[in-house]
Length: 317
Image (cartoon, rainbow, N blue to C red):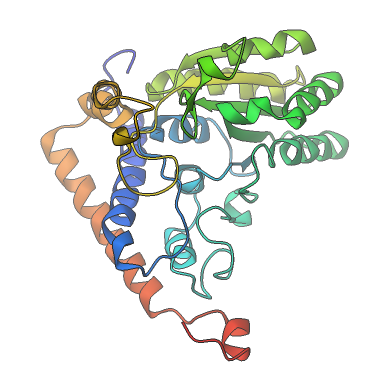
């Protein structure tokens, strides 16, 4: 973090990051049991971006995350029981058991639906932001995507439209350097993603995505601008995923990145850097509460029914 924080807000942000990490660690630990058949894109290492941005939002603001979505769903207030039931393919899942890890939704929390399509939710966020503007609402929409999505045409088309209409939308790029296994330097002639905003006359900024306070500060400025009618902001947050692109394993053996690189980023990850705001007693208390919540959500998922339509067709699991 940028400076020592000892107040309740700092602990709240840390707890939010820890909760996301513990949930994904449980998914990682259980995945080999094959009870969850949906391929997960874990966000371990990305937690500060979701927590810091969502802490700057109001309940009526909305987020449109991409497929690396667990952290965004939880940070915005999505129901954990419904999320895990979805990963288990159960009727009580947030997508009724049909969407899996990459298709999470909780409209009551402002999670408007995630997508497996690269850059797929970027224009959705702009469309909802246009609706907010037309209705005279002061709500803000957030589009979330990885660095690979900036290579899709719809990213540039949407930035242009949003800037032209001065829409209340925040474009949040989680730049973790790699699109699957290819480094950004081997994909983009201009690797500074925030600079794409310049050609559209909109504000573009970058920040340390592993510093939850820096994330929150940048997000707050962008949200305030949007509410004042000053238009969209593109924020590039530098962060890093510590596991494979899709799945629950390490992948340094593939040769596209080294174990030394992974360990260096782990050491300056959001959980590690944010730990200064909590005491050992705080951490023990938070961990116990979170683990109990996860236990309850897993028990719910395992006991929930299979999707009704699947059973009606006579298919067994």
